[in-house]
Length: 69
Image (cartoon, rainbow, N blue to C red; front, side, top):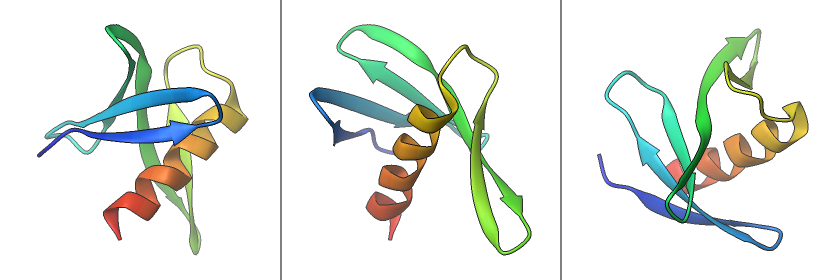
């Protein structure tokens, strides 16, 4: 799987897909965290075990979903 960049507000983030279905979120050389999709009924909620804001995680997840379409 190939890494790709997304633009979120003022930040250029690099998304590194992992073999286990998670996505490592990087800002430059800094790892912000790892996020993953969780199906909830007919929608997908993005989650993390890192200390990231829920809305921030959802925004990144939406951009990942758009990229993957």
